[in-house]
Length: 289
Image (cartoon, rainbow, N blue to C red; front, side, top):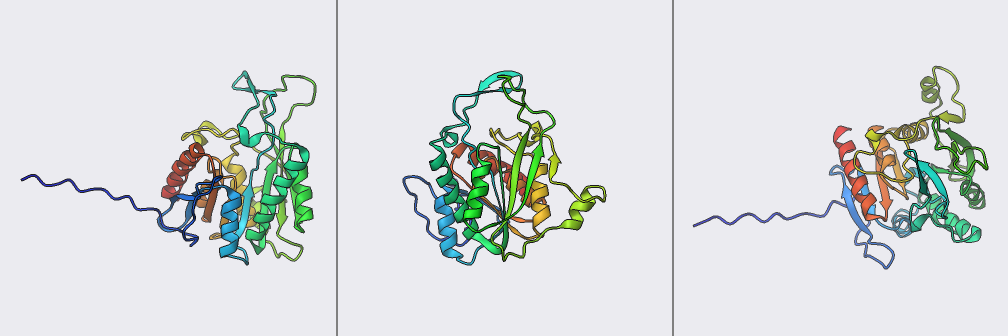
């Protein structure tokens, strides 16, 4: 008599935030896609608006020590750029299309308000962007009563050439670092940043290369940030064990940097392909951390 093969039962990952049942909606699967067994990291397949509302309801005093956000730049408007020596259209997806300046700003106000409310009283928020979006972000932060701490210029040594030859070559992005409010006693690891900068005060212009092939081994994201950039933001403004959140998770670079730096991480992403890439990267980083 042959023995029956054992049926493998896949268990759902543990819920590290204790959010409980989280039903899907017309705009969001609202599912926990991946979680590190000891609770160090979690990735939600969700619309960040709905996930943040859920987190704020569960933790009304705030939950995260730091949030890093790389929101849509609203650049996918039929323009062109250079990639790998070839002319390509600037078309990252429907999520990156501009509706209008007013609607774009309203979108920024809504996700920023939720991020502010999800921060602990002394928490801080980092947001990256080009001139297409960053001015709206800064204005919305001020409208929401946040305290602007720094604007960081990320200088790219080898930017794509300007094919139209009608403006200067775009070679920078801006990061805004802001505290939850004027009363926030935010953390800045001044000594660590000074030590990283050969014993000199670190300035607000950071010259860092774009992500290399080794950071894209599990797949590519059109706006992927370099691991070095995220690591510096995290280590400058949080302590080991801090809780980090990324509402626009993308390929998961924020989570990889958080795990490697000894922090805890939660990410939210709506695109299933980027969920796949991010989960693979986070799992790899969790195993190496």
